[in-house]
Length: 340
Ligand code: NAI
Image (cartoon, rainbow, N blue to C red):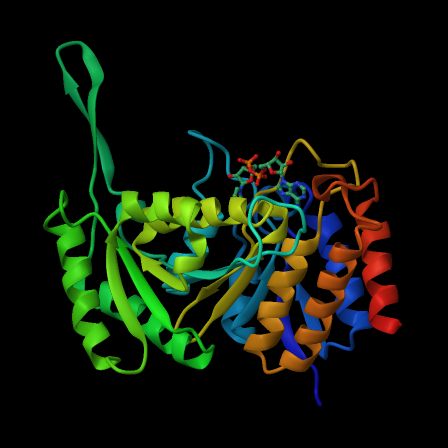
């Protein structure tokens, strides 16, 4: 099989460490990938003077698929989020975040959920401003939530199609239409319309987002696949990461009509940078989602099995999983399991 060219952005902070571990494991498993490596974020500013260099964008335009490490976003000041810019540039409208129990001994067992978050609209369009009053230029602030019928329908349709392809039985649409009658009301209305097309194939329910949060903690097993607008999805997908043992274990995919970018859901972890003990599992599982996307599911399944086996053995795990191993030692152990 000819190798598929994939854009690789190692990222900032712990990014290069977890990327190196991931590449070693993908290679050992026999993934047929040719990496086109580029910089972005703080690494982009340091190397080329831009957080999102044109060469990086050009590579993704050509390959249409990327594996990306975490990128540091300065808070309040400095450049805007490169992650948000990438989602906009390639219209990556669906953020797919699977959360599956891997770490034994947690509060929950056998969690196997997928959250699909609308990735381009809602409050994250960044339409916001201050309103001055008297001598206070920041007496008030306003952000605009934008929901379009087009955006809502396509992400809910994506959720149903994903459910059909992946054997999911039920879609839960979480919303706040009781209070935000226009924006959230439109999302719900569009979602209900799309759901009708799948009646008899995939079950559908809608649930107010605060009740959804409570039920995810009380009875996560009652859910299967969840779909919601941008900010609710951002918050609840991290809640779901917490249900399965933390950010170091959960991957995500940003999917558009023509392009897809896969990444760990966690950030650049400044507190761990340079220590060599970051958990590469989320990045590795993002690599597996990328392999599924380019038709190398067999290789991805072997890696997922090896990771699961390693974590269940309780040996050679990084500190966040309760062990004392370095990123490299954990990767070595997964590779031994792949070869064994
Ligand atoms: P973070 O996810 O980097 O860290 C939160 C906590 O989780 C820290 O205690 C960290 O040590 C731990 N953690 C994260 N990944 C881990 C891993 N692989 N192994 C073990 N522990 C891990 O979130 P934080 O500190 O809020 O953000 C740091 C930077 O990352 C910020 O600049 C933020 O904007 C950026 N960020 C980037 C994302 C992306 O590129 N998709 C997503 C989230 C944050």
